[in-house]
Amino acid sequence: MARKTADRRTITDRAGATENGSPALAPRYALPEDPAAGLGPASVHVGDCRQVLPRLGLSGGVDLIFADPPFNWSRNYDRAPAGAALGVQGAARGPAAVWRDDMPEAEYLAFTYSWLSACVSSLRPGGTLWVNVPDDWAAEIVVWMKGRGLGGHGGEGVAGVAGGPPAEMIMPRGGWCVWHYRFGQNRTRDGGDAAFVNSKVHALCFVKAPLAARCWRPLRVLEPSDRATVYADPRTRSKRDGFPPGMRVPLDVWYGPGWGRVQGNNAERAAGDFAHDNQLPEAYLERVVLACSDEGGLVLDPFVGSGTTGVVARAYGRRFVGVEYSAANAASAARRIGAGMAHKGVYLNRSSATARPRGSSTIASEPLAAACT
Ligand SMILES: C[S@@+](CC[C@H](N)C(=O)[O-])C[C@H]1O[C@@H](n2cnc3c(N)ncnc32)[C@H](O)[C@@H]1O
Image (cartoon, rainbow, N blue to C red; front, side, top):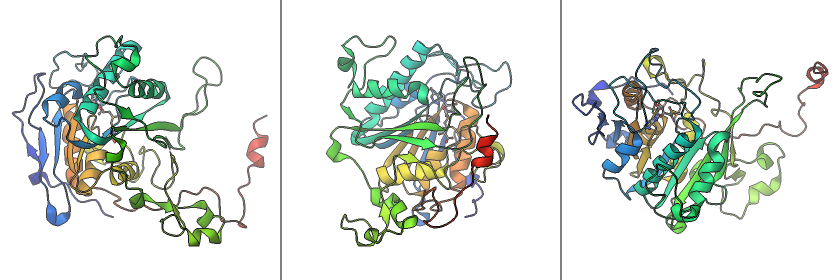
């Protein structure tokens, strides 16, 4: 599907919004709803989500949050020139500030618990929070969320964090998913950095109690089962579980066509000034948005980046609110959200099977194995 050209007339650039470090209460960018085209309204705020979220008046009203935070991997998130002002925890930021992505571990964890708390406060009862994080932080986040706030952490709290999650957060069964991709870099053979090639990020799902109020619509994101596509098992044609024949709820490890990292010459890579090192595939957000929110629902992303959550949420008629620390990223994300999805529906309901249908030829791996000795 061809990408539409960004309609800059639909983006209100509120250049007068705060740029001096105080949280922005009005969005820097606002795209109107377009019911005829099925597009929801979208807005993007500039600032630190910890300070902006509590001032948006969303408290208890958000249906779905997708958070893909900085990983503390020393990334230069908007490729600011060397010497650009770096944001410092809680301090005023200048117009050209970029996020400082190399905090001491304790500081990064305090930052993490703080934005998680702000997200939990923004959710409605039954609202869903997805967090996209690497191995480094997944365990801490799960323990924190399952700890149900400061009480769950022995009442001691965490230095620098005002309060914990104010309500019970539940990790539903199947809520610990993994996004698997197949283009990782070799680590060194020896030394402290030696490791298997990284090929995953954790997609952690939490629901604000009560679980019964959760929005869970798996029928929209079903995929063909391996029984149907690889084994031609006739039993998949007469299923009694209410699912269409041959279809299943996706596995909790996510991969397949359309799910690769959006890097290099990936066709989905936002072009020109949209380019962002950490752009997620549309297929990922399509699954999350469709399965965990309804049309007209309110979707929040506290770390907008290139705007993938907003692009998908708006395209499916959800109302979107995002926060981004970098003014440059926010501007390009708003333009990308206005341009729309590159592959709406293209990777939905597609098989992720890696095996070929039974009886067809196998992949020869022996010559490669011989070279390893
Ligand atoms: C991993 S990227 C998000 C990528 C996004 N999911 C996408 O598909 O493009 C994280 C983004 O969060 C922004 N950021 C870092 N700290 C932030 C904060 N405290 N508040 C808001 N945004 C922040 C960074 O500038 C960066 O653009």
